[in-house]
Amino acid sequence: MKRDLRAEIRALLLARPDGLTTRDLVVATKASDKSVRHSLGSMPDVYIDRWEFPRQGPLAAVYCAVEVPEDCPRPARAKRTEEELKEYHRAYTAGWHAAKKAEETPRQGLTTIRGPWPTQQDA
Image 1 (cartoon, rainbow, N blue to C red):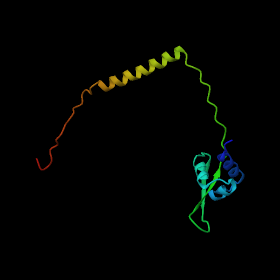
Image 2 (image 1 turned 30 degrees about the vertical axis):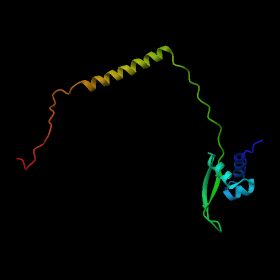
Image 3 (image 1 turned 90 degrees about the horizontal axis):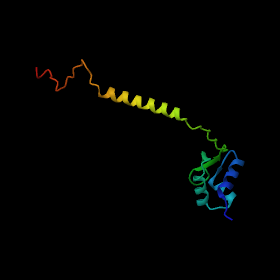
Image 4 (image 1 turned 90 degrees about the vertical axis):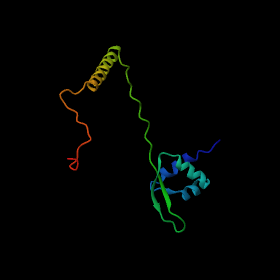
C-alpha cells in the first residue's frame, strides 16, 4: 500500500499550531527532504507562517496548516421557463438594436473641424 505523506504532514501540522520546519517534518515522518518539500508544495492548505534563523545554515521556513472547510454545495437552479427565455431574448435584442442605431446615427447640427491647426507662426 502506498504511503500518504501529505496526510501525515497535515496531521503533524494540525497538531502543532505554532508550525514546523521542513527539517522537523523530515525527522518526524522519516521521509526524504525532497519528498517533504514536494508534498508541502502540492498542499493548498499549508502555508509559510514565518521564517526562523537556525544556528547554522540558511533561513528555515515554518509551515502551518489550516482547517479546510467542506465544499460549499452548489445552489439548485431551476431552468428558465419558455416565457422567461423569450422575454430575456426580446430585451437583449432590443438593447442590441438600440445601441447599433445610436452608433449609426450621424450627429446632426454639429460641425466637425479637422486639423491641421494654424499656429501663431503661420499667421
